[in-house]
Image (cartoon, rainbow, N blue to C red; front, side, top):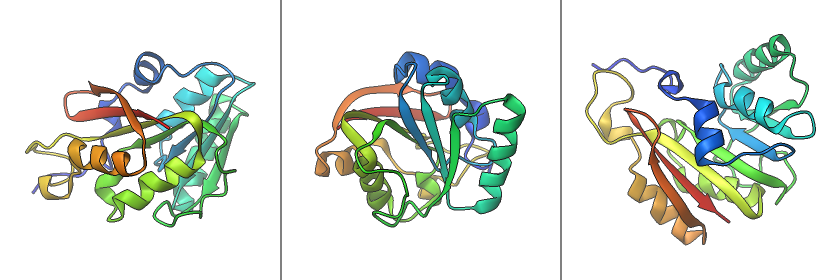
Length: 185
C-alpha cells in the first residue's frame, strides 16, 4: 500500500514555482488555500511579496494553522495571516471577495471530494486578472503518495476551470510526481 506523504510538497520547489511559473512579485496579495502544516508555499510567497504584500495561509485544520503560525514567527515574517476555513463551502473563506492577485491550490484536491467547489471558492477570491496556481499529483502509480484512484487529473481541473471561465495560461511539470496549471480570471 502506498505511503501518503501528506501531499508531497517536499518534492516541490516553492520559490522556483512561484517566481518562474506564477511570476509572483513584490506587493501582491495571495492566498495559499490548503496551506498544510509546513506552509511551504505560504512562507515562500511571504518572502517574495515582501513587507508590502500579504499572504493568507488557509486550512481546515486549526492545528495546521498553529504550526504555520509558529513557522512564520521563526522566519520573522509579519505579512502572513492564518485563516481557518472549509474550502468546500462556497463563500466560507473570510478573505474579501475579488481581493487576491493569486491563489494556490497545492496538493489539496486529492484530499477532497468537492473539487469544483474548491476551485469556485478560489475563483471568488481572485481579482479580475488574478492567477490561480493548481499543483497536484500526476496520474501515475507511485510507491508513495495518494493511491491513483483518488488523484485528480489535470483534464478534470481544466473542465472545472472552463465552467468558471478561467483561462489556462500555462501547464508545466511541477516536479517528478506533480503537474502544474496556471489559470487567469
